[in-house]
Structures are given as structure tokens and as C-alpha cells.
Image (cartoon, rainbow, N blue to C red):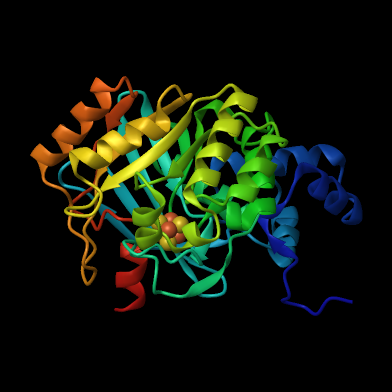
Length: 348
Ligand code: SF4
């Protein structure tokens, strides 16, 4: 028998079937399960917000479940644009970040998939902070639902590009994506979802068979293996050629263009000869290159390429018929790089 005060989990981890089972155990009619589940997509953080559920049932819910796996700890608003960054505490004290960005089409939310990251990319604020744990499906869903409520249910896109390597939390990621598109849940089309990986080749191949039509984004950041290894340690395990082949296989199998993210670091990967090499690697592939002026993280020795250098790099790719865009930097005044806020909160 469960001791009083020990919860079964959090509300956002529950599926509709879990709630049917729970209602049956509580001798509640099954339509109650649907009414309760409907509140997940509304981003509640307290069972007292379930206005169509009677007080006794709300007490039963509160006895068995935490209403939210996340507690908002800090919120930052950019003065340059409408970007907002949120620092959440998890129930066990781990800390994560999520970001809300405003675009012409509506809002986009960027979520974390892990508390910390094992990948240790040299330029990243999340590296060197240690690894907490994988996020649960409920913790990922709650980031979307809670932030969606904060922007008056205006979220149109979701990116899994915050703290963590999503494919390192593979099973929870796949379940999260299935629940995200569930018509009875948040009901966000996977065509509006981007998942970013630093290049876990075996998981990229496995993901093809999941048949989930997200946009796959690969953090490439280099035109060859020598430079990539200096930036991304996992490149030792998954060499450059294997990664490009896996990207091609994914694009051909899914029929969906793959995005290669390329952050430009001064003096490392930003020369025209690097752009020529990159163009040769990607020529005739179903892909798109997203150039990024690299974020500079205090304490790390990586500097962003200059604006003229970035433009020159872009021109070389265009001259080689590579589909390329320059990612707009949002929220640059509020510790933009993923992991920076978490780091400042943990070090406070
Ligand atoms: S860039 Fe992404 S994958 Fe690399 S350490 Fe940072 S969070 Fe992890």
C-alpha cells in the first residue's frame, strides 16, 4: 500500500488511458477522465484551476499527482524583441530552460530534453555543468503546455533544441512527439516541429522507421572531420562521412529536407575555403544550411565570426547553389545560448 503523501507522478505524464484507469479505481465515471485530460493542453499548474471538476475529485487528484512537474523559477524578457526565456526547477531540484520566440507566423517554443548534456560540445554553455538526467515525457510536454498558456495559446511551432541531446533521450523523445500531435492533447502537427541533434548517427537511422514527419536539424558546424572533432567530441564516435551519409539517408527516406546548422566561429570554421569544402560535401543533397553567428559564452574561448565574414561565407554557398539562410538572432540581450541561464542560476 502507498504511504500517504507519496505521489504516483505528475499530471502531464498521464495519458488519457491512465486517467480512465485512475477514474475506475476512484469509482468515477469515465467521462471525468476526458474532462480532466482536457486540462493538460490548457497548461494548468494547480488542480484548483480545473473549473468543471468538483472539489472532491480535485482533492483526489491532488493526493495522487503533482499538478505540474515544473516550477517557474526565473523569467527574462528581451528588450530587443519579444523573446522570453524561462528557467524551471524540476521536482528533484534539477534546472532546465525553455525559450519563447515571436515570429510573423506566431510563437515558437524551444524546449529542453535533458537536465544537462553528456555531449560536451566545446562551445556550449551546457557543457561542463555535468549531467542531471533525462527529462520525462511529462516534463517535455509541460514546457510546451505551460508556455503556450503564457502566450495565450499562440504556440505554432516547437523546437527540441534547448539543453540536452534529444536523441540521447530517444524513447522519451519519440513518446513526447506522439503525444504532442495527439488530437485529444496539444494537437501540434509534427510538420511544425524541429528536433536538433549533434549527430548521433545510429539514432538518426533508427528514427527513420518511427515515421514521424518532423524537421531534422543536425548541428554540423564544420566542413570536415578535423574541424568537427575539435568542436564536437561525439564526432570521434560518429565520423563526418557517416554523419553526412545518415543525413542523406534520412532525407531520401522521409522525403524531407534536412537542416544543417553551422555556427560560425572566428578563425576556426569561417573562411571561404571552408564554405567551398562544405558546398562540395552537400552538393545535390536534399538539405538546407542554416548559418548562425555563434553565441559567445562567457569563460569559453570561442568568438563569433564577423558580419562581413558571415556574409562572404554565405555568398560562397549561394554561388555553389546550396540552399542557405542566416538565422535571425533573438533574445541576444538575455543570455541567448542554450544552457547559459541554467548555468547562471546554478552558480548564483
Ligand atoms: S550543443 Fe547541444 S548537444 Fe552539444 S553540449 Fe550543448 S546541449 Fe549538448
